[in-house]
Length: 511
Ligand code: 5AD
Ligand code: SF4
View 1: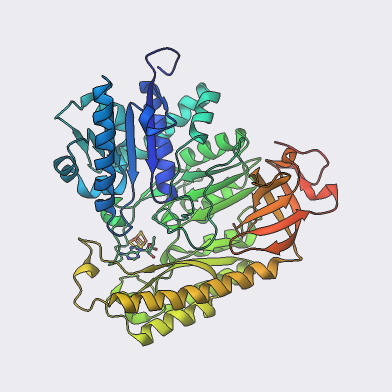
View 2: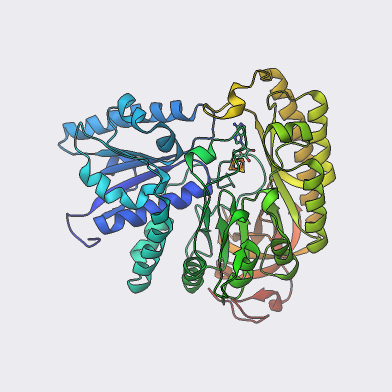
Protein backbone atom coordinates (compact mmCIF):
# COMPACT_ATOMS: atom_id res chain seq x y z
CA UNK A 1 0.00 0.00 0.00
CA UNK A 2 0.90 3.63 -0.05
CA UNK A 3 2.78 3.39 3.21
CA UNK A 4 6.40 3.71 4.19
CA UNK A 5 9.43 1.57 3.45
CA UNK A 6 11.07 -0.11 0.51
CA UNK A 7 7.86 -1.36 -1.09
CA UNK A 8 7.19 2.13 -2.47
CA UNK A 9 7.71 2.42 -6.20
CA UNK A 10 8.03 5.61 -8.17
CA UNK A 11 6.16 6.70 -11.25
CA UNK A 12 7.01 9.56 -13.55
CA UNK A 13 4.24 10.70 -15.88
CA UNK A 14 5.00 13.01 -18.75
CA UNK A 15 1.87 14.67 -20.06
CA UNK A 16 1.42 16.09 -23.53
CA UNK A 17 -1.55 17.92 -24.95
CA UNK A 18 -4.79 19.06 -23.50
CA UNK A 19 -6.43 19.48 -20.10
CA UNK A 20 -8.15 16.18 -20.61
CA UNK A 21 -4.72 14.58 -20.65
CA UNK A 22 -3.61 16.51 -17.58
CA UNK A 23 -6.71 15.28 -15.81
CA UNK A 24 -6.13 11.74 -17.08
CA UNK A 25 -2.58 11.80 -15.74
CA UNK A 26 -4.05 12.53 -12.32
CA UNK A 27 -6.41 9.60 -12.80
CA UNK A 28 -3.45 7.37 -13.62
CA UNK A 29 -1.68 8.48 -10.45
CA UNK A 30 -4.83 7.79 -8.47
CA UNK A 31 -5.15 4.34 -10.03
CA UNK A 32 -1.50 3.57 -9.23
CA UNK A 33 -1.54 4.78 -5.63
CA UNK A 34 -3.12 1.60 -4.21
CA UNK A 35 -0.40 -0.39 -6.01
CA UNK A 36 2.22 1.50 -3.99
CA UNK A 37 3.33 4.09 -6.51
CA UNK A 38 4.39 7.58 -5.49
CA UNK A 39 5.49 10.41 -7.75
CA UNK A 40 9.08 10.52 -8.99
CA UNK A 41 10.74 13.91 -9.49
CA UNK A 42 12.64 12.82 -12.59
CA UNK A 43 12.39 9.98 -15.13
CA UNK A 44 15.84 8.80 -13.99
CA UNK A 45 14.56 8.07 -10.49
CA UNK A 46 11.39 6.30 -11.60
CA UNK A 47 10.52 2.60 -11.68
CA UNK A 48 7.69 3.30 -14.10
CA UNK A 49 7.67 5.98 -16.78
CA UNK A 50 4.39 6.75 -18.48
CA UNK A 51 4.02 9.08 -21.41
CA UNK A 52 0.53 10.41 -21.83
CA UNK A 53 0.39 11.25 -25.50
CA UNK A 54 -1.56 13.61 -27.71
CA UNK A 55 -2.50 12.70 -31.26
CA UNK A 56 -3.68 15.95 -32.74
CA UNK A 57 -0.30 17.51 -33.28
CA UNK A 58 1.42 16.92 -36.55
CA UNK A 59 3.67 13.85 -36.65
CA UNK A 60 2.49 13.01 -33.14
CA UNK A 61 3.26 9.31 -33.46
CA UNK A 62 6.76 9.94 -34.84
CA UNK A 63 7.52 12.23 -31.90
CA UNK A 64 6.40 9.54 -29.49
CA UNK A 65 8.67 7.01 -31.17
CA UNK A 66 11.69 9.27 -30.85
CA UNK A 67 10.89 9.91 -27.19
CA UNK A 68 10.64 6.14 -26.70
CA UNK A 69 14.08 5.80 -28.26
CA UNK A 70 15.49 8.09 -25.54
CA UNK A 71 13.63 6.22 -22.82
CA UNK A 72 14.96 2.93 -24.10
CA UNK A 73 18.50 4.16 -23.38
CA UNK A 74 17.45 5.23 -19.90
CA UNK A 75 15.94 1.79 -19.32
CA UNK A 76 19.12 0.10 -20.53
CA UNK A 77 21.29 2.23 -18.23
CA UNK A 78 19.06 1.32 -15.27
CA UNK A 79 19.28 -2.38 -16.19
CA UNK A 80 23.08 -2.17 -16.07
CA UNK A 81 22.69 -0.97 -12.47
CA UNK A 82 20.36 -3.91 -11.75
CA UNK A 83 17.20 -1.80 -11.70
CA UNK A 84 14.07 -2.68 -13.66
CA UNK A 85 12.29 0.26 -15.26
CA UNK A 86 8.97 -0.18 -17.02
CA UNK A 87 7.79 2.10 -19.78
CA UNK A 88 4.17 2.74 -20.65
CA UNK A 89 2.47 4.69 -23.41
CA UNK A 90 -0.96 6.14 -22.68
CA UNK A 91 -3.28 8.63 -24.36
CA UNK A 92 -4.48 9.07 -27.88
CA UNK A 93 -1.35 7.86 -29.67
CA UNK A 94 -1.55 4.66 -27.60
CA UNK A 95 -5.17 4.30 -28.62
CA UNK A 96 -4.46 4.95 -32.29
CA UNK A 97 -1.26 2.90 -32.66
CA UNK A 98 -1.96 0.00 -30.27
CA UNK A 99 0.19 -3.07 -31.01
CA UNK A 100 2.22 -1.08 -33.52
CA UNK A 101 3.94 0.66 -30.60
CA UNK A 102 5.31 -2.54 -29.12
CA UNK A 103 6.31 -3.73 -32.57
CA UNK A 104 8.26 -0.55 -33.29
CA UNK A 105 9.50 0.31 -29.81
CA UNK A 106 10.78 -2.82 -28.12
CA UNK A 107 11.39 -1.10 -24.78
CA UNK A 108 7.68 -0.51 -24.18
CA UNK A 109 6.02 -2.65 -21.49
CA UNK A 110 2.51 -1.22 -21.43
CA UNK A 111 0.25 0.41 -24.00
CA UNK A 112 -2.96 1.73 -22.54
CA UNK A 113 -5.78 3.71 -24.13
CA UNK A 114 -7.71 6.46 -22.32
CA UNK A 115 -10.59 4.13 -21.48
CA UNK A 116 -8.49 1.74 -19.42
CA UNK A 117 -6.36 3.73 -16.98
CA UNK A 118 -8.08 2.14 -14.01
CA UNK A 119 -6.53 -1.15 -15.16
CA UNK A 120 -2.95 0.12 -14.99
CA UNK A 121 -1.91 -1.88 -11.91
CA UNK A 122 -3.09 -5.13 -13.55
CA UNK A 123 -1.37 -4.26 -16.82
CA UNK A 124 1.89 -3.50 -15.04
CA UNK A 125 1.68 -6.78 -13.16
CA UNK A 126 0.85 -8.68 -16.37
CA UNK A 127 3.70 -7.22 -18.41
CA UNK A 128 6.95 -9.20 -18.54
CA UNK A 129 10.15 -8.53 -20.45
CA UNK A 130 9.36 -9.44 -24.03
CA UNK A 131 5.62 -9.69 -23.23
CA UNK A 132 4.14 -6.23 -23.12
CA UNK A 133 0.55 -5.62 -22.04
CA UNK A 134 -1.62 -3.80 -24.56
CA UNK A 135 -5.09 -2.53 -23.62
CA UNK A 136 -6.83 -0.27 -26.10
CA UNK A 137 -10.39 -1.56 -25.96
CA UNK A 138 -13.23 0.88 -25.41
CA UNK A 139 -14.74 -0.24 -22.10
CA UNK A 140 -16.66 2.94 -21.54
CA UNK A 141 -19.19 1.65 -19.03
CA UNK A 142 -16.50 1.32 -16.41
CA UNK A 143 -14.66 4.54 -16.91
CA UNK A 144 -16.67 7.01 -14.85
CA UNK A 145 -17.33 4.32 -12.26
CA UNK A 146 -13.64 4.30 -11.46
CA UNK A 147 -13.69 8.04 -10.80
CA UNK A 148 -16.44 7.45 -8.28
CA UNK A 149 -14.46 4.71 -6.57
CA UNK A 150 -11.44 6.96 -6.32
CA UNK A 151 -13.57 9.79 -4.91
CA UNK A 152 -15.13 7.43 -2.37
CA UNK A 153 -11.71 6.21 -1.25
CA UNK A 154 -10.50 9.78 -0.88
CA UNK A 155 -13.52 10.71 1.17
CA UNK A 156 -13.11 7.81 3.55
CA UNK A 157 -9.35 8.25 3.81
CA UNK A 158 -8.29 11.79 3.03
CA UNK A 159 -4.56 11.89 2.45
CA UNK A 160 -2.49 15.05 2.52
CA UNK A 161 0.23 13.07 0.80
CA UNK A 162 -2.11 12.35 -2.09
CA UNK A 163 -2.87 16.04 -2.50
CA UNK A 164 0.77 17.03 -2.61
CA UNK A 165 1.47 14.27 -5.03
CA UNK A 166 -1.17 15.51 -7.46
CA UNK A 167 0.04 19.05 -7.27
CA UNK A 168 3.57 18.05 -8.11
CA UNK A 169 2.37 16.57 -11.39
CA UNK A 170 4.73 16.72 -14.32
CA UNK A 171 3.04 19.13 -16.65
CA UNK A 172 4.00 19.69 -20.21
CA UNK A 173 1.93 21.65 -22.69
CA UNK A 174 0.67 24.04 -20.09
CA UNK A 175 -0.59 26.75 -22.36
CA UNK A 176 -3.18 24.55 -24.02
CA UNK A 177 -6.75 25.13 -23.16
CA UNK A 178 -8.94 22.58 -24.79
CA UNK A 179 -9.81 19.00 -23.88
CA UNK A 180 -8.72 18.02 -27.28
CA UNK A 181 -5.51 19.90 -27.98
CA UNK A 182 -4.07 23.37 -28.06
CA UNK A 183 -0.92 25.08 -29.24
CA UNK A 184 1.00 27.31 -26.91
CA UNK A 185 -0.20 30.57 -28.45
CA UNK A 186 -3.73 31.83 -28.12
CA UNK A 187 -6.16 32.90 -25.47
CA UNK A 188 -5.37 32.35 -21.83
CA UNK A 189 -5.54 28.88 -20.45
CA UNK A 190 -7.51 27.56 -17.53
CA UNK A 191 -4.66 25.18 -16.90
CA UNK A 192 -3.70 25.10 -13.26
CA UNK A 193 -0.17 23.74 -13.40
CA UNK A 194 2.51 25.25 -11.20
CA UNK A 195 -0.09 26.46 -8.76
CA UNK A 196 0.92 26.94 -5.18
CA UNK A 197 -1.14 25.18 -2.55
CA UNK A 198 -3.87 25.16 -1.52
CA UNK A 199 -5.56 24.23 -4.77
CA UNK A 200 -8.30 26.74 -5.48
CA UNK A 201 -9.22 25.84 -9.06
CA UNK A 202 -9.73 22.37 -10.45
CA UNK A 203 -10.91 20.47 -13.49
CA UNK A 204 -13.72 17.97 -13.37
CA UNK A 205 -14.38 15.64 -16.28
CA UNK A 206 -18.08 15.25 -16.98
CA UNK A 207 -18.05 13.93 -20.52
CA UNK A 208 -15.70 12.14 -22.83
CA UNK A 209 -15.61 11.26 -26.48
CA UNK A 210 -17.28 12.68 -29.54
CA UNK A 211 -19.91 11.54 -32.03
CA UNK A 212 -19.64 14.51 -34.34
CA UNK A 213 -17.06 13.16 -36.80
CA UNK A 214 -15.76 16.40 -38.22
CA UNK A 215 -13.93 15.23 -41.31
CA UNK A 216 -10.54 16.59 -40.14
CA UNK A 217 -10.54 15.21 -36.60
CA UNK A 218 -9.19 12.07 -34.96
CA UNK A 219 -10.98 12.49 -31.63
CA UNK A 220 -14.01 10.29 -32.42
CA UNK A 221 -11.56 7.51 -33.30
CA UNK A 222 -9.13 7.94 -30.41
CA UNK A 223 -11.54 8.93 -27.62
CA UNK A 224 -14.55 6.94 -28.80
CA UNK A 225 -18.19 7.88 -28.69
CA UNK A 226 -19.77 10.38 -26.33
CA UNK A 227 -20.23 9.24 -22.75
CA UNK A 228 -21.67 11.40 -19.97
CA UNK A 229 -20.86 11.02 -16.31
CA UNK A 230 -23.81 10.62 -13.93
CA UNK A 231 -25.18 13.68 -12.12
CA UNK A 232 -24.71 12.21 -8.63
CA UNK A 233 -21.09 11.38 -9.34
CA UNK A 234 -20.36 14.88 -10.67
CA UNK A 235 -22.12 16.57 -7.75
CA UNK A 236 -20.23 14.36 -5.28
CA UNK A 237 -16.86 15.22 -6.81
CA UNK A 238 -17.68 18.93 -7.01
CA UNK A 239 -18.79 18.89 -3.36
CA UNK A 240 -15.60 17.14 -2.33
CA UNK A 241 -13.51 19.67 -4.24
CA UNK A 242 -15.38 22.56 -2.61
CA UNK A 243 -14.75 20.91 0.76
CA UNK A 244 -11.03 20.89 -0.02
CA UNK A 245 -11.11 24.64 -0.66
CA UNK A 246 -11.55 24.64 -4.42
CA UNK A 247 -13.52 27.70 -5.44
CA UNK A 248 -13.51 27.37 -9.20
CA UNK A 249 -14.34 24.25 -11.18
CA UNK A 250 -13.97 23.85 -14.92
CA UNK A 251 -16.10 21.08 -16.35
CA UNK A 252 -14.23 19.17 -19.01
CA UNK A 253 -15.34 17.20 -22.01
CA UNK A 254 -14.34 16.85 -25.64
CA UNK A 255 -17.90 17.93 -26.34
CA UNK A 256 -18.81 19.16 -22.92
CA UNK A 257 -22.10 20.76 -23.88
CA UNK A 258 -23.29 17.43 -25.29
CA UNK A 259 -23.32 16.24 -21.66
CA UNK A 260 -26.70 14.81 -20.67
CA UNK A 261 -28.05 12.84 -17.77
CA UNK A 262 -31.05 12.20 -15.61
CA UNK A 263 -31.43 14.66 -12.76
CA UNK A 264 -32.62 13.83 -9.25
CA UNK A 265 -36.02 15.16 -10.42
CA UNK A 266 -36.17 12.25 -12.88
CA UNK A 267 -35.99 14.62 -15.84
CA UNK A 268 -33.48 14.68 -18.68
CA UNK A 269 -30.80 17.22 -17.84
CA UNK A 270 -28.39 19.00 -20.11
CA UNK A 271 -25.30 20.95 -19.15
CA UNK A 272 -27.40 24.03 -18.30
CA UNK A 273 -29.38 22.18 -15.61
CA UNK A 274 -26.18 20.63 -14.31
CA UNK A 275 -24.57 24.05 -13.94
CA UNK A 276 -27.58 25.32 -11.99
CA UNK A 277 -27.18 22.36 -9.62
CA UNK A 278 -23.43 22.84 -9.20
CA UNK A 279 -23.90 26.55 -8.49
CA UNK A 280 -25.83 25.54 -5.35
CA UNK A 281 -22.76 23.89 -3.79
CA UNK A 282 -21.52 26.15 -0.98
CA UNK A 283 -18.04 27.48 -1.65
CA UNK A 284 -18.08 26.88 -5.41
CA UNK A 285 -18.01 30.48 -6.48
CA UNK A 286 -16.96 30.02 -10.07
CA UNK A 287 -17.91 27.60 -12.81
CA UNK A 288 -16.57 27.17 -16.32
CA UNK A 289 -16.82 24.51 -19.00
CA UNK A 290 -14.84 23.62 -22.06
CA UNK A 291 -15.04 22.84 -24.92
CA UNK A 292 -18.32 23.22 -26.74
CA UNK A 293 -19.91 22.49 -30.08
CA UNK A 294 -22.32 25.06 -31.53
CA UNK A 295 -24.92 22.36 -32.19
CA UNK A 296 -25.18 21.53 -28.50
CA UNK A 297 -25.56 25.08 -27.21
CA UNK A 298 -29.18 24.79 -26.09
CA UNK A 299 -31.50 27.34 -24.47
CA UNK A 300 -31.03 25.96 -20.95
CA UNK A 301 -27.28 26.46 -21.26
CA UNK A 302 -27.76 29.99 -22.54
CA UNK A 303 -30.15 30.61 -19.62
CA UNK A 304 -27.40 29.47 -17.26
CA UNK A 305 -25.18 32.18 -18.72
CA UNK A 306 -27.98 34.68 -18.10
CA UNK A 307 -28.94 33.61 -14.58
CA UNK A 308 -25.87 32.21 -12.88
CA UNK A 309 -23.39 34.68 -11.46
CA UNK A 310 -21.08 31.77 -10.78
CA UNK A 311 -20.86 30.90 -14.46
CA UNK A 312 -17.93 32.94 -15.70
CA UNK A 313 -18.41 35.14 -18.76
CA UNK A 314 -16.06 33.25 -21.04
CA UNK A 315 -17.07 30.81 -23.74
CA UNK A 316 -14.89 28.70 -25.95
CA UNK A 317 -17.10 27.90 -28.92
CA UNK A 318 -15.07 26.74 -31.92
CA UNK A 319 -16.44 27.62 -35.36
CA UNK A 320 -13.45 26.37 -37.44
CA UNK A 321 -14.40 28.29 -40.61
CA UNK A 322 -16.66 31.13 -41.68
CA UNK A 323 -17.52 29.59 -45.05
CA UNK A 324 -20.66 27.50 -45.37
CA UNK A 325 -19.07 25.47 -48.16
CA UNK A 326 -16.10 24.56 -45.96
CA UNK A 327 -18.27 24.01 -42.88
CA UNK A 328 -20.27 21.49 -44.89
CA UNK A 329 -17.10 19.78 -46.14
CA UNK A 330 -15.90 19.65 -42.54
CA UNK A 331 -19.21 18.02 -41.53
CA UNK A 332 -19.59 20.63 -38.83
CA UNK A 333 -23.40 20.36 -38.83
CA UNK A 334 -23.83 24.12 -38.46
CA UNK A 335 -23.72 27.08 -40.81
CA UNK A 336 -22.20 30.50 -40.51
CA UNK A 337 -25.59 32.10 -39.84
CA UNK A 338 -26.46 29.46 -37.25
CA UNK A 339 -23.24 30.28 -35.40
CA UNK A 340 -23.78 34.04 -35.58
CA UNK A 341 -27.39 33.71 -34.46
CA UNK A 342 -26.23 31.62 -31.52
CA UNK A 343 -23.64 34.22 -30.56
CA UNK A 344 -26.33 36.90 -30.65
CA UNK A 345 -28.49 34.87 -28.28
CA UNK A 346 -25.58 34.26 -25.92
CA UNK A 347 -24.63 37.93 -25.88
CA UNK A 348 -28.24 38.92 -25.23
CA UNK A 349 -28.12 36.62 -22.20
CA UNK A 350 -24.66 37.65 -21.02
CA UNK A 351 -23.48 40.89 -22.65
CA UNK A 352 -20.01 40.82 -21.07
CA UNK A 353 -19.13 37.36 -22.36
CA UNK A 354 -15.69 36.91 -23.92
CA UNK A 355 -15.96 34.61 -26.90
CA UNK A 356 -13.07 32.41 -27.97
CA UNK A 357 -12.81 29.81 -30.69
CA UNK A 358 -10.80 27.51 -32.88
CA UNK A 359 -10.12 28.05 -36.56
CA UNK A 360 -8.59 25.89 -39.24
CA UNK A 361 -7.09 27.49 -42.33
CA UNK A 362 -6.23 25.65 -45.52
CA UNK A 363 -8.83 22.94 -45.22
CA UNK A 364 -8.96 21.00 -48.53
CA UNK A 365 -10.67 23.08 -51.20
CA UNK A 366 -10.54 26.36 -49.23
CA UNK A 367 -10.52 29.27 -51.70
CA UNK A 368 -9.51 32.85 -51.01
CA UNK A 369 -13.23 33.70 -50.86
CA UNK A 370 -13.81 30.97 -48.24
CA UNK A 371 -10.92 32.31 -46.24
CA UNK A 372 -12.31 35.85 -46.48
CA UNK A 373 -15.49 34.45 -44.87
CA UNK A 374 -13.37 33.13 -42.02
CA UNK A 375 -11.75 36.53 -41.51
CA UNK A 376 -15.12 38.25 -41.51
CA UNK A 377 -16.78 35.86 -39.05
CA UNK A 378 -14.08 36.75 -36.50
CA UNK A 379 -15.29 40.35 -36.59
CA UNK A 380 -18.98 39.58 -36.91
CA UNK A 381 -18.95 37.19 -33.98
CA UNK A 382 -16.73 39.53 -31.94
CA UNK A 383 -14.21 36.78 -31.20
CA UNK A 384 -11.90 37.83 -28.38
CA UNK A 385 -9.23 35.18 -28.85
CA UNK A 386 -8.70 31.92 -30.66
CA UNK A 387 -6.50 29.01 -31.44
CA UNK A 388 -5.62 28.94 -35.08
CA UNK A 389 -4.45 25.85 -36.89
CA UNK A 390 -3.17 25.04 -40.34
CA UNK A 391 -5.11 22.08 -41.61
CA UNK A 392 -2.99 18.99 -41.33
CA UNK A 393 -4.16 15.62 -42.64
CA UNK A 394 -4.77 12.94 -40.02
CA UNK A 395 -4.52 9.41 -41.37
CA UNK A 396 -7.88 7.65 -41.25
CA UNK A 397 -9.98 10.84 -41.35
CA UNK A 398 -12.03 11.60 -44.51
CA UNK A 399 -10.41 14.97 -45.27
CA UNK A 400 -6.94 13.44 -45.33
CA UNK A 401 -7.63 11.81 -48.69
CA UNK A 402 -9.43 14.78 -50.28
CA UNK A 403 -7.93 15.62 -53.65
CA UNK A 404 -7.79 19.40 -53.30
CA UNK A 405 -5.20 19.77 -50.53
CA UNK A 406 -3.91 23.32 -50.08
CA UNK A 407 -0.25 24.26 -50.58
CA UNK A 408 1.77 24.85 -47.45
CA UNK A 409 2.73 28.43 -48.44
CA UNK A 410 -0.94 29.31 -48.85
CA UNK A 411 -1.75 27.83 -45.44
CA UNK A 412 1.12 29.74 -43.85
CA UNK A 413 0.04 33.01 -45.35
CA UNK A 414 -3.61 32.56 -44.33
CA UNK A 415 -2.64 31.53 -40.83
CA UNK A 416 -0.54 34.67 -40.53
CA UNK A 417 -3.40 36.92 -41.64
CA UNK A 418 -5.95 35.25 -39.39
CA UNK A 419 -3.61 35.29 -36.41
CA UNK A 420 -2.88 38.99 -36.93
CA UNK A 421 -6.60 39.75 -36.86
CA UNK A 422 -7.15 37.70 -33.74
CA UNK A 423 -4.12 39.21 -32.01
CA UNK A 424 -5.50 42.67 -32.71
CA UNK A 425 -8.92 41.75 -31.35
CA UNK A 426 -7.36 40.19 -28.26
CA UNK A 427 -5.22 43.29 -27.68
CA UNK A 428 -8.32 45.49 -28.01
CA UNK A 429 -10.19 43.35 -25.50
CA UNK A 430 -7.32 43.44 -23.02
CA UNK A 431 -6.92 47.19 -23.47
CA UNK A 432 -10.63 47.74 -22.87
CA UNK A 433 -10.23 46.28 -19.38
CA UNK A 434 -7.69 48.87 -18.24
CA UNK A 435 -9.22 51.25 -15.72
CA UNK A 436 -12.11 48.90 -14.91
CA UNK A 437 -12.64 46.73 -11.82
CA UNK A 438 -12.74 42.95 -11.93
CA UNK A 439 -13.06 40.10 -9.46
CA UNK A 440 -10.02 37.87 -9.40
CA UNK A 441 -9.56 34.47 -7.82
CA UNK A 442 -6.03 34.56 -6.42
CA UNK A 443 -4.33 31.27 -7.21
CA UNK A 444 -0.59 31.44 -6.82
CA UNK A 445 2.41 33.58 -6.05
CA UNK A 446 3.78 35.62 -8.93
CA UNK A 447 7.34 35.60 -10.18
CA UNK A 448 7.98 39.06 -8.77
CA UNK A 449 8.13 39.42 -4.99
CA UNK A 450 4.98 41.03 -3.62
CA UNK A 451 2.91 39.84 -6.57
CA UNK A 452 0.22 37.21 -6.73
CA UNK A 453 -1.52 35.84 -9.80
CA UNK A 454 -5.18 35.06 -10.25
CA UNK A 455 -7.79 34.60 -12.94
CA UNK A 456 -10.10 37.23 -14.23
CA UNK A 457 -13.70 36.24 -15.03
CA UNK A 458 -12.61 36.17 -18.71
CA UNK A 459 -9.92 33.59 -17.91
CA UNK A 460 -6.76 35.53 -18.61
CA UNK A 461 -4.29 35.71 -15.70
CA UNK A 462 -4.10 38.90 -13.65
CA UNK A 463 -0.85 39.88 -11.90
CA UNK A 464 -1.69 41.79 -8.77
CA UNK A 465 0.47 43.66 -6.28
CA UNK A 466 -0.91 42.06 -3.16
CA UNK A 467 0.20 39.90 -0.23
CA UNK A 468 0.25 36.10 -0.46
CA UNK A 469 -2.20 35.99 2.44
CA UNK A 470 -4.89 36.66 -0.17
CA UNK A 471 -4.26 33.37 -1.99
CA UNK A 472 -7.46 31.36 -2.21
CA UNK A 473 -9.72 34.38 -1.93
CA UNK A 474 -11.62 36.34 -4.52
CA UNK A 475 -10.81 40.02 -4.53
CA UNK A 476 -11.89 43.04 -6.51
CA UNK A 477 -9.00 44.65 -8.33
CA UNK A 478 -8.47 47.68 -10.49
CA UNK A 479 -6.91 46.77 -13.82
CA UNK A 480 -3.91 49.01 -14.36
CA UNK A 481 -2.32 47.53 -17.45
CA UNK A 482 -2.64 44.93 -20.19
CA UNK A 483 -0.01 42.62 -21.67
CA UNK A 484 -0.51 40.26 -24.59
CA UNK A 485 -1.96 37.41 -22.56
CA UNK A 486 -2.34 38.80 -19.08
CA UNK A 487 -3.54 41.80 -17.14
CA UNK A 488 -1.94 43.82 -14.33
CA UNK A 489 -3.85 45.18 -11.36
CA UNK A 490 -3.84 46.54 -7.85
CA UNK A 491 -6.25 45.65 -5.10
CA UNK A 492 -9.32 47.84 -5.14
CA UNK A 493 -9.13 50.35 -2.30
CA UNK A 494 -11.75 49.07 0.14
CA UNK A 495 -11.42 45.98 2.30
CA UNK A 496 -15.04 45.18 1.48
CA UNK A 497 -13.84 44.29 -2.01
CA UNK A 498 -12.31 41.04 -0.75
CA UNK A 499 -14.86 38.25 -0.62
CA UNK A 500 -14.20 35.13 1.45
CA UNK A 501 -15.61 31.79 0.28
CA UNK A 502 -19.37 31.72 -0.08
CA UNK A 503 -19.90 34.93 1.90
CA UNK A 504 -20.71 38.46 1.01
CA UNK A 505 -18.22 41.29 1.55
CA UNK A 506 -16.26 40.86 4.78
CA UNK A 507 -12.96 41.77 6.29
CA UNK A 508 -11.53 38.34 6.95
CA UNK A 509 -9.85 36.39 4.20
CA UNK A 510 -10.73 32.72 3.89
CA UNK A 511 -8.35 30.11 2.49
N1 5AD B 1 -5.73 19.91 -38.61
C1 5AD B 1 -5.71 21.13 -38.03
N2 5AD B 1 -6.37 21.42 -36.91
C2 5AD B 1 -7.08 20.46 -36.34
N3 5AD B 1 -7.84 20.46 -35.23
C3 5AD B 1 -8.34 19.22 -35.06
N4 5AD B 1 -7.94 18.42 -36.05
C4 5AD B 1 -7.15 19.16 -36.87
C5 5AD B 1 -6.45 18.90 -38.06
N5 5AD B 1 -6.48 17.72 -38.66
C6 5AD B 1 -8.07 21.64 -34.41
C7 5AD B 1 -9.54 22.08 -34.45
C8 5AD B 1 -10.04 21.65 -33.11
C9 5AD B 1 -8.80 21.80 -32.27
C10 5AD B 1 -8.83 21.05 -31.01
O1 5AD B 1 -7.77 21.31 -33.07
O2 5AD B 1 -9.59 23.49 -34.56
O3 5AD B 1 -11.12 22.44 -32.61
FE1 SF4 C 1 -13.24 16.67 -33.25
FE2 SF4 C 1 -15.42 17.79 -34.35
FE3 SF4 C 1 -15.65 16.15 -32.22
FE4 SF4 C 1 -14.56 18.60 -31.90
S1 SF4 C 1 -16.68 18.15 -32.53
S2 SF4 C 1 -13.77 16.64 -31.05
S3 SF4 C 1 -13.46 18.84 -33.84
S4 SF4 C 1 -14.95 15.58 -34.26
